[in-house]
Image (cartoon, rainbow, N blue to C red; front, side, top):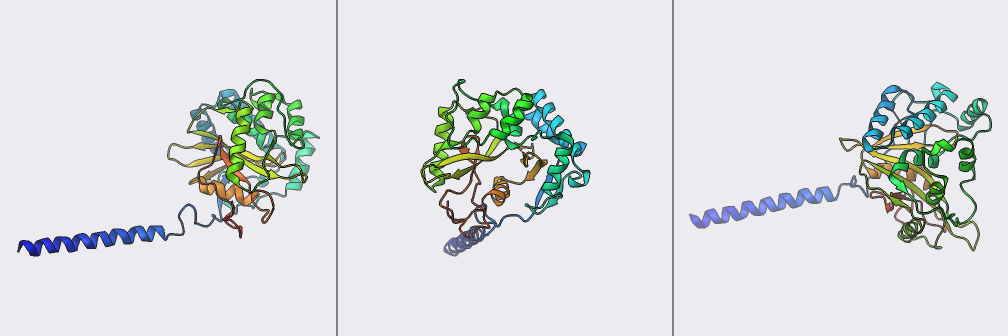
Length: 314
């Protein structure tokens, strides 16, 4: 009898092992794993044109430790922009849309902005991110940055000459240290470019104050303006906030004369797909794919545009 019971236990144990293995095999075959799932065909965002979404963002910024003057200055500029364009071009609270769809024609929006603001360029992603994130960033001394290539910040600085308060108290020196283009190796290896960014930022005295609730998200582009030149530059940047329930919120200014956005994502891969779907669109080039830094590290969850035929190349 004892032998029978022992055999029974062994059989049951074997069945359990098989069931567990099958379950793990099923998970492993799931195409929705972070690296293999397709990009979402919808995003959820607001243009901060309503009190509810503004209060949500204000509470998260304040909770993360962003100073009151930076928050107030940011919302003053949000309201100023939204009042310069047609209400129907903006969301009414959070709305869902295809990632590249907008409710406006960018040229009509530019005309509307200029009709109210003249030749003032407005504010872009780099100025906006510095205004919100400046409390968590520091640069070294006031030594001018030896920027590579053409000055990609000339329009930014035109805005800052008119409205120096737009940086929320951060200095123009810090702004240049963070965003000026940098020399790069002529390679398509993203990991080598990530290391180059980290080393260059370190040489400029850039350091980040760790805060899990607020992070700087920077999209770097690799360019070869001439046969002899190879540079990295900040093509887009925004601020990532983590809510108490783990939901991610990304704050961005789409362009100088395009709206502010607060987007909601379940995880960083969704954020990566949104950004790479917009910016990782030049395939088969001799330069590296755009890549995303979270503070001074490659963002976990970053991947090339999954809709690219050569997305595995990075």
